[in-house]
Amino acid sequence: MSGANGFTFWLSMTVALSALGAGEQHLVDKALDRLDQAGGDPMAVTMPASEPSEVDGRPRLAMARSIVTFHAELDTHLAILDGDVLPLLSLARNNRHLGLRERALDWYRRAELADRDGTFMGQIREEMADTAIEIGDSSIVLNHARLLLARDDAVMYADRIGNMLGVLLQYPLGPGQLELARSLDRFGARLPVGCALTVARTYELDGNLPAWHAHLRGLLARGDELSLHQLAVVLQGIADSFYRVGHTAWSRSLYERFREHNVGTLSAWATYQLGVLASLDGAHDVAQKHFRSLCEREQDLPWREEACWRQTQSEAMARIYTQLREHSWQPSREDAP
Image (cartoon, rainbow, N blue to C red; front, side, top):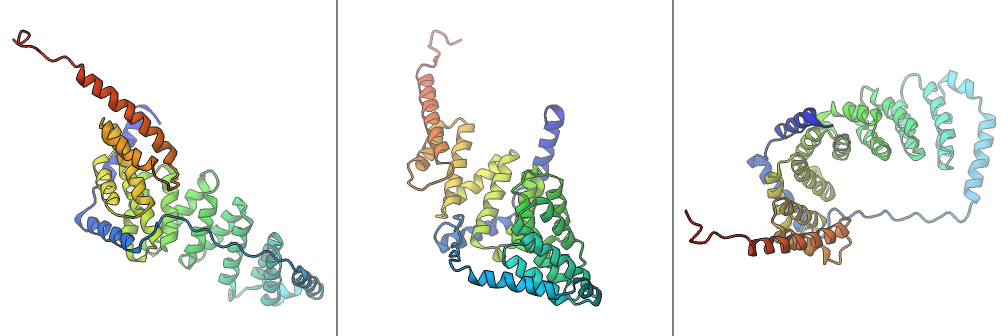
């Protein structure tokens, strides 16, 4: 996007974002106090413990044999006609347990056909969605997310749909992800926090910064519902969205408040951004102090290498500015009018 159209788009974004009101400022302080008191780094991601590998394959072999026997004895067409859901559902679950997920989906579809009165429909759709997530194929995931969204009680499955949207965001952004985000948007404040964050992330990736920012501020108002990690992500996002549309005074105010608290990565990111803002203002002596504090840390930060590079550049710029001031021309009495 360039030229007049690009400028108009950027200007419309700056107008769309308003400063935080007094009530929201209080929520920011409350959130920072909560993060500070909890200790640790709320933005650190803890990897789940890996499950021990199954050395003894006999239970799996026994299950596989029982599936073959059960399938041989079951008249699938009659089960569907008679509405006998449970045997079909059992075969779907057992195939999924064995890792035969695409075959499991076939059995879930048969169970769905048999469930004409919808007694098990929600459960079947949930398990189909989870199986689709495990497969990870984007077209399968999108299809099953649409099936859940088509239900009258779709909001009950918002968490799962949000998980599916999260899987799809691992692929280049396209119409499918935006379709899901907009469909979920209709639930408003009824969206679970995790799902609302994924929707917000979708808008960020799409470059729809006002929508991203608006969702984050909505989540700030639900602060007590958020985990520490989610709270830190929301605070960072609000400050960053102000910065990215040019409201640097508003973003600087938030970054300075983040830095006043001992909240790990969020405080470190605020220091980095304050260094960038100082560089943009020509305050290279201030910028180098911020970048040096990050470069000299032992903590492994994603932007530490960049901070070291910026520190070097800021020091060089500060020296140049000092030399220019020392050699700048000063008018003498003879030059005075």
